[in-house]
Length: 319
Image (cartoon, rainbow, N blue to C red; front, side, top):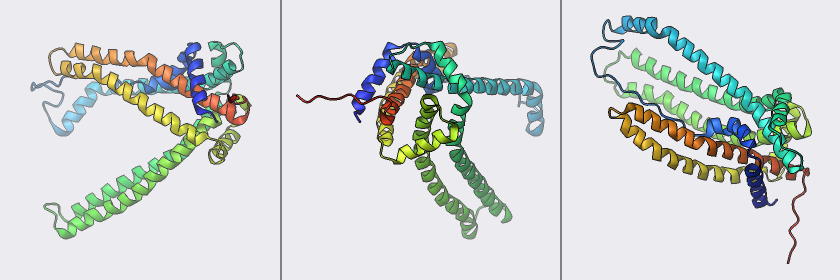
């Protein structure tokens, strides 16, 4: 497998068909760009929502004043997140379809990409959901263990009347935390390994859905088998991970250039300037992040075509 040629071809497709950047934005650009940090000054005056009453009365006053606003804001954020999730799934399917069209020498039309993505939306979502489900279960177990360990330690401390803990109390506090810590390390290692395998299997599974019109389970199973069949998928993942680290460092450097003045401004009277600088940082990185998202998906699609024989690898003639 000529990985260098795959990456070169992915970049050529990405740069030639700039309409793909729209899909790339929803696939990786919206979440891949650095987040703008919004700064707000904390009033040092004595008048705050918690300034009088204290305790429960202050909480009740705050909820009575801002409760409706908080609920509306949370519901709005959830709605926006759901919309972006729906569009993102369709955009990934459309991007896979259009990169394949480009490789086949057919017209690359943005509308056709959206139609292709939405036509197989449920299967695409199914692959993504099933690939993430084991990790969700593991992280839920981790959260339960952390909560139970903290509760056990607090209960042991409270049962001894509080105060300065003696040696026996310390042992009772530390024992459950150490036991949970060892178990959490094992679960974290499992989560990382499983996350990598399922991530690669999911990337391949999405392409089985779009390019071979397979079902959800069949696509994910075949992607899983490909990871272990020495067809080069894991090496492709490592290569793209290295590239991703490099891109992340560049994005971080550019973001820091804008963030440092923003932080300095937020500490002074120029709060609006700080917010504007943070917003500019996000906008500056928006297009590069969309381009990177397009390139990443194009690389996987071109790799998939060569791995499965949809496109023969170029023949290198010896001199």
